[in-house]
Amino acid sequence: MLLHLGMSGRLTIGRAGTNATPPAHEHLVLETESGARAGLVDPRRFGMVDLVPTSEEDNHRLLAHLGMEPLSDAMSGPALADLFRSRRTPVKSALLDQKLIAGLGNIYVCEALFRCKIHPERQACTLTEGETEALAEAIPQILEQAIASGGSSLRDYVQADGTKGGFQDLHLVYGREGAPCPNCGEASPIRRITQAGRSTFFCATCQK
Ligand SMILES: [Zn+2]
Image 1: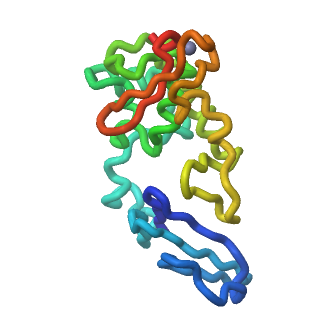
Image 2 (image 1 turned 90 degrees about the vertical axis):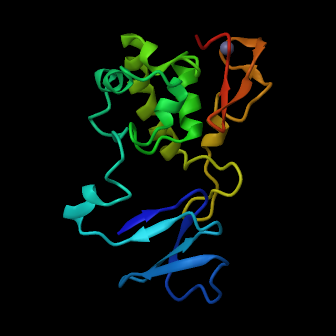
Image 3 (image 1 turned 45 degrees about the horizontal axis):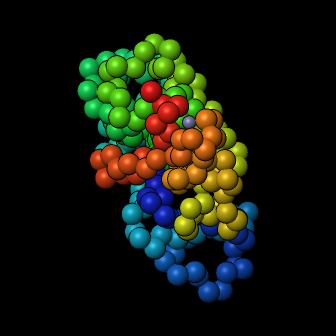
């Protein structure tokens, strides 16, 4: 089963038979023999569910074009350098490009660039070996921290048990426009710019 939550879908896990009134916008319910109940709630309907033989996974139209998996062994400095070599697009946009790296969203790209002290408007092809190495290390670290703290709850995201994630409390730049830079302080407040229609948060002093 291939399942995508879209922008704001969520999977709630409970016990079968305990949910007399299904929540609004619950489009799919799965009950297992052991009595668990999983419900897919997706108010905006950007989510997606499909059945696909495991052997066909890589050819599925929603997976075939996806790039490198950031939590796999494929993620490395040289691999990133290869992806960026001929790209003049801003590094922020390159990192968000799902055809290059799969599953990296806006929050985690902003956080990774800040931690690696890389300016989001830099052309991807200008990154040094040290910078691609740093990114290859920071990206999986940030994703793992986010997963460990239950994700980022900004508006409506909650975990399967209905509780909010805690990673938003660990954001160093994302959503912190005007706040002092956690690295260089009051002198350089976090700035917000728009790149390809998405907000980018960064420190103009720390990120070169
Ligand atoms: Zn700074």
